[in-house]
Amino acid sequence: MKSKEKETLKNMGDAELKALSSDLKKQIFQINFKRTTAPVENPLVLRLARRKIAMINTYLRQRELAKLQKSAEVKK
Image (cartoon, rainbow, N blue to C red; front, side, top):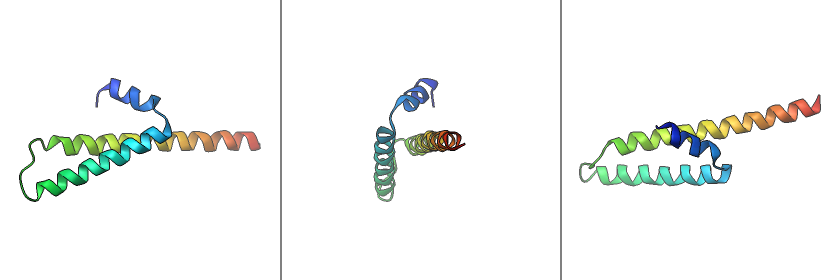
């Protein structure tokens, strides 16, 4: 994944990231469904979609942990 794509993902909001993740999951499902009847034109699309989902989940988790850490610091 290019660094420009990573930066755009980092700058997206939580809701946007979750929507993009669900869209990518639907895309993977559709490609896998089509793959049972005919070969896929570009099989790398699956790999790239899975990696992008992983990156989205990583950013969401980092934000969640940052929020928890801030709340823990406020309680102290």
